[in-house]
Image (tube, rainbow, N blue to C red; front, side):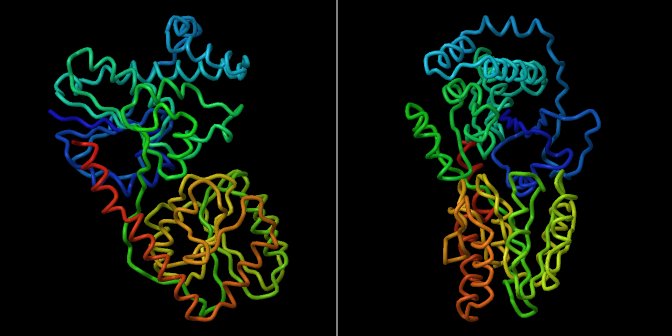
Length: 406
């Protein structure tokens, strides 16, 4: 029996990892598929429907006590990580604690995974971690165990943003990178820039690192429009990294009619809405709150939109940008992470520097408003074309599963 073990954070439970909905329908090449959410909360609830051929096995981990930390110090790869930090001058007690907690959590996940009865009847196992983090480390431990039992095992992991860029991590440190890259067979960041980042940081593992783009479903081409004035939309969790306050500051100086719709909620929602309530009369705002993916796609399909705006400080390649481009709507976004792989400046939208000023965003909005119709239509056509060439879910995921199942 050929088994795929897909390790997620919470999918198909709760909010988050919504983009996996675009992927799971294309899984093929396996006799059995198990999705294992590894970090569920006590009150977690199923929020997404899976295809009938996929089983979900929520992981029940048992937290290790303080004695677990002592046991970790006996592991050669843990001692190697501590020695590596000391030699490089990056050792701090806080980073050491972060690493030990990370590996304690990895062992808790591994201890739960190794008990799965499906593993006993499997001849071939692909362990697929959606994030290059603690579940990937647990997968590496499981792969070692299964190989000892004589099974054919392959481990792959995607990497996105928080699990990829150490400079955006707590204490500028991501634990056990060498361990993960040494043990995992293929590491597949969601952007070419992410793959290059890992290859430069860890050149000895360059051959096992390659980009693997995500993709979104085709909901039909709607095309951007300015017929009813400028209608911009943003879609994100309302958190500091998304920097929605900069959109507000840009619109404070607007002197032309504009409607700004934001989809999503988060801890800063009240603060951002309060700031936006003081915008000039020519600016209207619409706060849609949290919406599921199907509702978001229906909103895009049924409303006249002029542009999508993303001003995040950090990104992988935003799935939200892929989705809006599939409808043929131009994008204004910050040039961070792999965003430039989806937004070509002047071709399907405009890129802003990561440290842009509100005035720069407003100038791009004015430019979009004043473009001749044929130039604006070209941006819209190119948005759809670039999505079709690079981010079509059907094409990307069929190729992805064909490759990993071989």
